[in-house]
Structure formats: structure tokens, C-alpha cells
Length: 175
Image 1: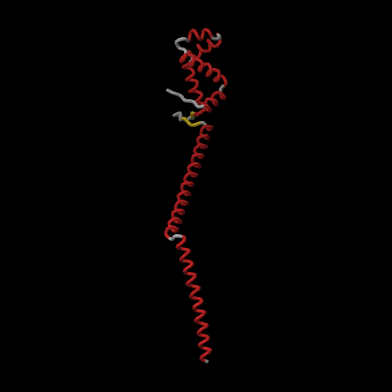
Image 2: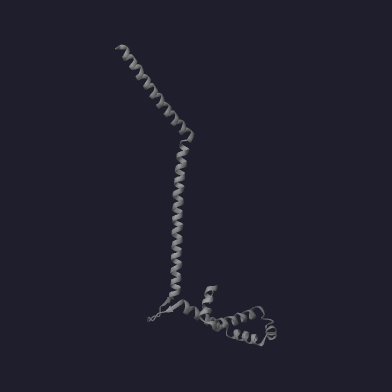
């Protein structure tokens, strides 16, 4: 069985039981001594202070007890056993609140991401439609068509005025 602790979980365990910190330090020292100095452990430890020597020896002897203490501390801070006859386990209220907070934060992030994706797709569709419209009719071509239409209207208007003026002159001569 392997137990992995992050910095926050370890801090919570130490805050919950100050004696646990002393035991943890002794166990860490014991583990370092056992792993890295196994060959020369007797010589190195005997050269160190007698108090440190006693703590290292105690830590090596209580190595299995430390695992049990860590597991017990984790179980009491993370899980709560209900009083049901089948002994169902539940998350502690603190951990449940953190999980709910994390889930709502994830929901918010997903909603923002989806909204952003929809907005980007909408903007892209508008840009494509505008590009297609302007591509279909070049701006220069549109300006030329508009000028031509306005010139035709002006010519038609002036021709109509001249025609009406000529007709008025003819009517005046005939009368």
C-alpha cells in the first residue's frame, strides 16, 4: 500500500496533531538514515548526538506504526463512518465542501469555454459571410455601378426637363 501526501494534506495533519509533527520528523530522519547510510549507519549515527541516535533508532523501530498513524489521521480528516449497521463511509464535511467548490469552479470554466467557442464560431461565420459578399462584388465594381445609376437618373431627369420645356415652347407657338 502506498500513501501519497501533498503539502496541504500534510500541513492539515500536522495542525490537527502537533505530536504527529515530531513523530514525522523522527520518521523522516530514520528513513533518510536507513536508505542513504545503511552501510555506514552505525558509524554515522554513533558519531552524531546521542539524542539523534535514539530518535533514529526509535523511528526505525516504529516505522510500521507511522504508516498506521498516517492512515488513521487521513481517515479521520477525510472520511466519516456513519452509525449505520453496515458502517458506510462518508466524506468529511470539509472535504465535501472542497469537492463541491472544485466541481462548481470546473462547471464555470467549462461554461466560459463553451461560450467562448460559440462566440468564436459566430464571429467566424459573420466574417466568412462578409468576405463572401465583398468578394462577390468588388467595392470598385459596386462604386462604378452606383455612379452609373446616378448618372443615368440625372440624364433621364435633364432629358425630361428639356422635353417638357420643348413641348411647352411648341404649344406656345401653336396657340
